[in-house]
Amino acid sequence: MLAQYEINYESGSRVICEIGYGLLEMIFACRLPDEEFFGDLHGREQLLVLIEPCKTEGKDASLDCVEYRTTKTSFVTDIRNVKRLIGRVLTRGKWGIIDRTPGTAQTSFVEEEDED
Image 1 (cartoon, helix red, strand yellow):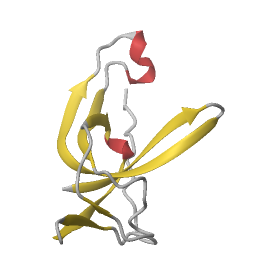
Image 2 (cartoon, rainbow, N blue to C red):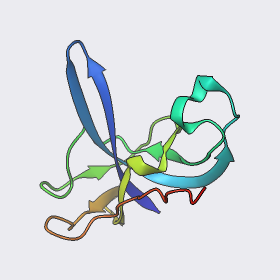
Image 3 (cartoon, helix red, strand yellow):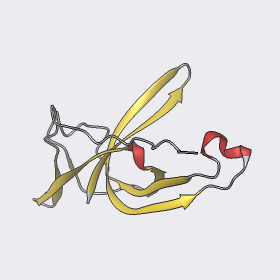
Image 4 (cartoon, rainbow, N blue to C red):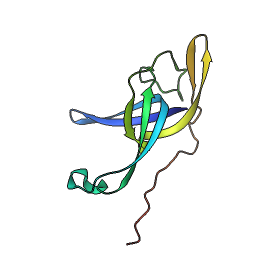
């Protein structure tokens, strides 16, 4: 299954949002230890995903024709970084990414409030 993801990181004084595509390999549910190190997330369950990113040079397949032949090393990230699941098709020895999502509804993860 192919996923579009967004990763935000700081570069100097700027925050950069990187759009990527990758094979969604696995979804993990894990409970974080009840330690202050994890801040507001301590003692809570967290959903993580293992993604094998496609080499697409940062192109956005909802705007341009994007193809790839190879992938990069897999990484783990928060499932909230996955923005949508999309399609792909094998043609002439390359995978073409099919992302026709502009103007459509997007997934939203909302945390439930504890009733304690």
